[in-house]
Image 1: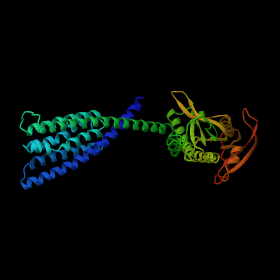
Image 2: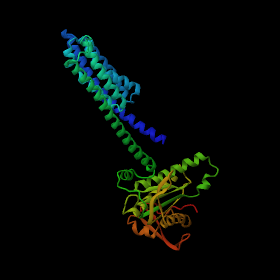
Image 3: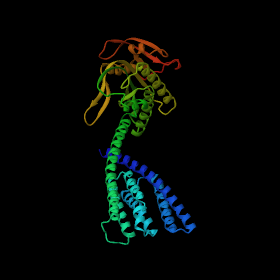
Image 4: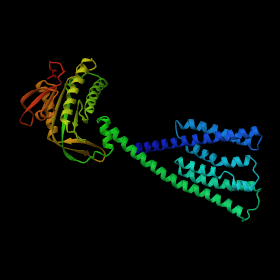
Length: 421
């Protein structure tokens, strides 16, 4: 749970970082224009040019630095508060430093729009309380500016002061609306983060076992994870004599060789749209035809089996795992597929006699000295492009005699690889 919360916070932090990039870039642009106008006024000898130039240059420099920082990380709560106060106060600084002494100007032309823009910028920061701070501060500064410019005259209830108070209340109201918008946006960002987290959990759970396109179709809602009966093909792979290989070798060497082989086998399964359902110590079980429908699942499974045999042969010949010998068994038919497990752990798997038979066919590879064996049902459905040799009347444990087929690709060596007996 803590991990999920941390990842959600990370997603919200990323949203804040992106928002800060936009805010900083906008303020750098506006402040640069302000500094340029101030420079023009200084050159022309117009009043207020120096203060406008200084304020614009200072804000452009600071937010240029903020823009660089926002490329790496979102600002802290304290930094966001300081920036919000600075953005609200820029209009106040402009009026005070320019020495405006006309109350009518302060009421009519003092940049109230900048106050409102500062409040709305606080909304983008996805920190709802900042909007309340910005709205309240903008209203207070607005009325303070008017009082400063008017010379501190008594607050007479004339229309001028009424208008000033109205604007103060309006700015505070904008802050309250901003708070509501920011709260809703923050909740939306949390929801998006939660969905993203769920999708990433699915990718982490299945990404090592399922081809990427399959995961995307599951996430898009094309696949419903209900328990159902389905015709599919089951493939088992087993590394021969792994116990003997492990004896007397350091555990890290054993694990490295095992992972090397199983990774290659899993890749071949994924390339044909299969799912590595589970790793079985020194082997694996894969299914083809679920959770996505695939009319050619038997052919895909045989292609994967032949490719796994070739990969094992290459790995053995390379010297990286010279002792590697494997057996692959494939069977097809109706099984029950769906989620199995409890609250703490669940997995998508297949259950049924087909699974048991596929496992026993794989065991028969050792008995017959073959690498890839498939059932007659698979042989009938796999199509052309394979070399198949029948083995009739093979007795499997718990079943009557079956005809099995040794399968290889046409371009494989004419001499059949032999598994250790």
